[in-house]
Amino acid sequence: MWVDKHKPHFLEELAVHKKKVEEVKIWFEERLQAAMDDHNNVLLVAGPSGVGKTATISAIASHLGATIWEWNTPTPTVWSEHLYNANSGLQYMSKLDEFEGFVERVRKYGLTSPTLKGSLAPVILLVDDLPVVNGRVAYGKLQRCLKLLVQLVRFPTAIVITNYDKDDSADFSTRCWEELLVSLHNAGACKVNFNPVTINSIKKTLTTICRKEQREVSADTIELIAKSSGGDIRHAITSLQYLCLNPQRRPILPLKERLDNIVCLDDASSLPFGKDETLSLFHALGKFLHNKRENELTTASDRDAFILKEKFVRFPLKMDAPEVVLCQAHGQARTLSDFLHENVLDFLNEEAIDDAWLVASYLSDAEFLLSSLNRLLTRDFGAENIVQSAAASVAARGVLFGNAHPVPSRWHAIRRPKLWEVEQSLRRNKCQMLSQRGDLCNSLTLSNQIVMATEYRPALKWLGCRASESFQADDMVEDDGGSACFHEKKLDMSDDEIEDW
Image (cartoon, rainbow, N blue to C red):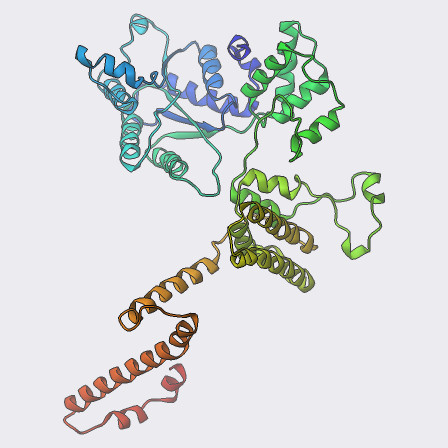
């Protein structure tokens, strides 16, 4: 594979930003030159896949004349292989157990590899791939192992952690890795975040590989591969090799047409290469709420496409089409609409009352579309998908179009919709009413529920308050020996107390 064949061996060959490489190099230089210490010898290298994390550490180690001792996750044992070896006395060990044993050996005996004995070169321990964990118990075990490694290792150690995009559900594994990074950082480990590789750096690397492989690939094609890789240089190199295997597989199109194919939702003839882009729900919400736009109409065709009144004119968006962002975020229309409704006012100009009215009208239209799903007599998943997509599009585009005077971009926290708390309280009260009424009748109609909520429950609450006041009055009469009654006590209250009450 070209990824392994053209692996960078020198710092000049890295596609990572020079400042990031220098930051990591300085950290290793300080740890290798200092005497062995009991702490602060672990570097957490985090970032998306294919951004040069391991390659950077390898190139820096080569530059410093250090030897890398690498621990990789062992090859998983197939169940049939485990059954075959069961009678031989070999005990099965999970990958997490093997990693725990490795950490314990490093803590007690250091690095004992035969290849390192007698070597005078400094040693760097590289943990390139952590075991996959599932569940709180396994996660806690992995966290304890890594904390032990951070606190007790006596030589420079790099732990490579790959960050994966969070989906809209914020699943357990994603939260675990975030908690793990924070926990190790608090335990004394240093942390460096790698960003996706820039398009220019990827283009430079691909051009160099084409020259070494003596392949003629046009500059437009290289730019197309670089832009479709999503900052993953490993993916870009693999795509280039795949393209060079059969360069006549796809007719050559102008660059603009091929770039348009990448973001086209319904394009049947998709490119043979390209990385699927995913966004978190909050990233998509940020795009819609911040509403970043160009300062002017970019091309003459944009100005001459339609003749609109001035109040309907908007500058081009600095992002993909809203439907593309929605597809990348995999968000539900109901969730999107609720979050936009809760947070959109924070991103509107305080004096733009007309903008607020227009945004509210579009969100109301989206809510009307979603409420129509509850009126369907039978489940029609095709119709539901269309309604969901239309409602999400109306909500997103309504916020973008209605916010004609957005406030300047700034950091702002996204709040959880309060509507969810109201609905949860509504369901809880409904279940409580049904349980209270269950002994008296087998079923409860909607009208009976309304009567209970508006008449019975307030009356019972009022009677309960009156009963408690009567008990308090009786206690006061007994304590005062009949010298004062509750009515006289109440008249002695000051005006301030009455006003506060």
